[in-house]
Length: 250
Length: 318
Ligand SMILES: Nc1ncnc2c1ncn2[C@@H]1O[C@H](COP(=O)(O)OP(=O)(O)OP(=O)(O)O)[C@@H](O)[C@H]1O
Ligand SMILES: [Mg+2]
Image 1 (spheres, chains in turn blue, red):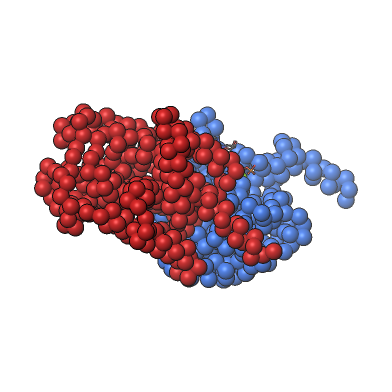
Image 2 (cartoon, rainbow over the protein chains, first blue to last red):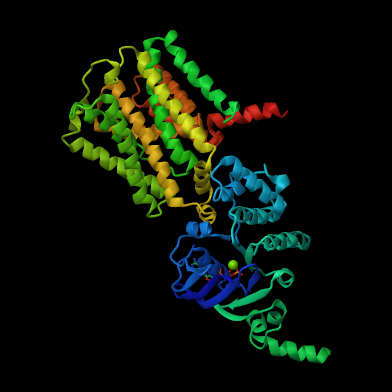
């Protein structure tokens, strides 16, 4: 089943068309990747999918229902959870309290919410830091906190916006199994990621956005060898040059 | 709720309730005035301290509670307690409407503060001009001490009623502090976008907070009317009350249950002493409040209650 689909989605900021008739589908149970050069419109697409921005044109469907007009908190209740590329912790609260805000979406009582928050903290490896003020966390800690809070809302779909950016290779290696385990228990993941090692490792399917348009999709390996994708990242003519160089070395 | 949360509350309010056994009428008058401000500050604190929406216009809520309580008795012959309850409801509604108009327009920070100030000023000018408020001459509630009239022959009666209100509001605040609504309110204060992403209905949360805040500060207004039996527009809707509840909450400790009470008692204590010493300088107490506010924000941003808590923690973990 298709859990999330965006159809002909566009977003205009004044003279800039940040997202341009983009369409994509995220199958339930998958880890789907969204990649593209800086400024391609990936974060904007997430904001449209989660309700933080209104599209200039197009629709967003979640589990088959049109949610284009719904505000973010209603979509969260349906099961869409997003993280922020620029982390947005509740600075004045502890890690436990931060995560509990997410957990309160499904638990009315304090004890139930705190217990659910603790379980999520254990899942993402924040358990030893529960009583730490969020403001005192390292970059890696803050990224985990973003993930934990979103996960605490018991989502069906997780939208992860560069949760690996700024982590060192060993921190990335630590968090990959966490993401796999989250998917294994039934949460669908759509992730924006620049760390190609992670994309190759995790994603079943990858979509490529460049200058607001979807230019390619497919299994990660195929997409990385796609001429249009290489050109989008490295500039016009790059694919041909690489092929020529590759030929010379062979 | 744990004993640790209740204990300071029980001790403070218990001690205050026993003051009529030994205190002079002068001291009791002082306490009643200070505690009415404390109640108003508790209302301000719910919206400002927990919700992070800093209002400069809580006079709009205080005055509505006060006028409704008084006018329903004097003009419509309604029982004083019923008038008081209606005043609370009307102040809650006023808060909700101010919130609806400003929060829906996404006003935040200093914009919200200015808009609340404007609402209070408009109400003050209207109340000063209108006939049914007694206009500039003001409004007198007839002195007829009896429990049914919400007037007490001894000062202790009013003190206990005010303390009962503070106890009720403190328990309500503690309950909010420990529950879903409180967590969502604090989340809105800390980061609206993050709260929204986690399923918090930001507008509804703010509206609920400002309506509750209005009810509580409106109750303080109603008590003020019953205590002094006189109102005019500059008392009910005057900037003085907006400023006093705000300073009491900030000095006492934002987002704490007892902060506003401690802050109001400390401020009024200092204010009375300076008025006693420097009574010939009119407005000297207000000037002092300003200085205290600046000092509090600069040196004890967590307020008196926050500072006490930190001292206790430091002693517990040497
Ligand atoms: N609120 C906004 N107002 C105006 N322009 C915006 C706004 N948000 C994004 N943009 C512009 O839209 C374009 C797409 O931005 P977006 O953040 O979606 O890119 P991205 O693919 O997430 O990039 P990155 O990989 O750097 O995170 C950029 O040119 C950006 O400057
Ligand atoms: Mg981005």
